Length: 68
Image (cartoon, rainbow, N blue to C red; front, side):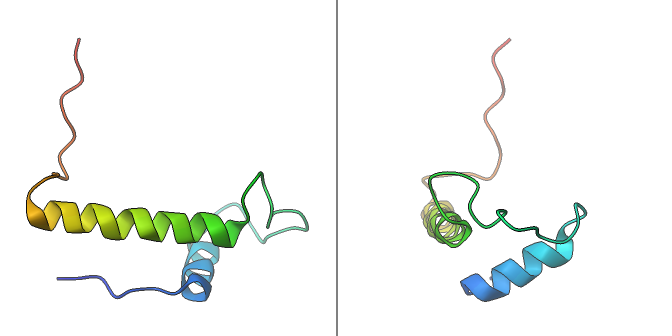
């Protein structure tokens, strides 16, 4: 079953809800070069492309075994 697409605001609320660290504090919105919204958009874009690759059979959810 396909997961419902979440917009950035929905994802932010979901992440805050799932967080066990606590409430956001000033400065949390910018932890590096990219804003939190930008990172969430990049994550969503990657997830969509990865799901499409799985559907096409060019990727798998199972990781490759680690060489020992």
